[in-house]
Amino acid sequence: METPEQFSHLVRARRSVRDFRPEPVPHHVLERVLGDSTWAPSWSNTQPYLVAVAEGARRDQLAEELRRQFDAGVAAQTGGPWHKLRALLTRTGLPNGDFDTTLEYPAELQAFRRATGFGLYETLGIDRGDRTARNAQLRRNFDFFGAPVAVFLFVHSGLQEFAVLDAGIWLQTFMLSAQANGLATCAQGALATWPGPVRKAFDIPAAYRLVCGVSVGYASPHAVNDYNPGRRALPRAAPRP
Image (cartoon, rainbow, N blue to C red; front, side, top):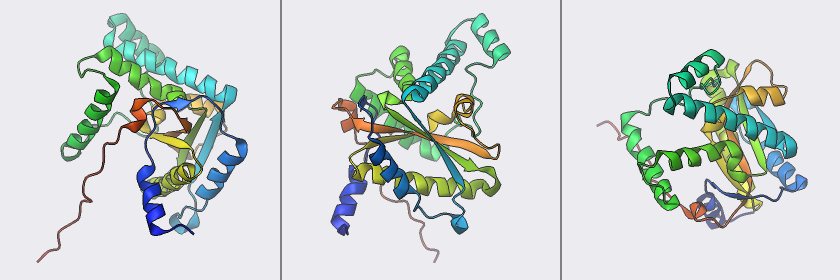
């Protein structure tokens, strides 16, 4: 049994790692982590989620297709009329996720998002106005930051928001188990931007929607992995008089 102090350390030690070493994750370690994640609580124990685990050649093929989508999207945004027309005609590069990953952040939350982003780019030495470098870093999402394993998390549409809630609990359980087993992770909403390549690579029932992906592997010594944006105090509702 872990002590409360050990558990607190585990929770605080987990980071969103954005640079991985290339060595593969041993099969028995990955299976142990996936096994732990099955014990996450869910709505009436329905476990309304589905995971697709990509390794080896399948992982590489997915990375290639997702980077192609990203490159086409950047070209449509920054290129001339021909690039925009081609994107409209072929739909290549245009976000078409089951959930909108390009949504506008609420004003009350935007400041936290910007502070985290600015701190990350400062750690990477990327100037706020350097669009090329920023796009290059964003593109790394679709190479899974070099991680050897990519896990894609789907939720059952029949349970609506409650399936997403249960998926979040599963995801935290998965990432904490990974941390306890010496692995690093990065949960990425960006990986839900184009579900087509994932559906092409795996047999995904029609009722399931791609909500995010998770890169899994061993953290490299890159400085980006030391970035710690911290946490604000837990927002609490004030009791009414």
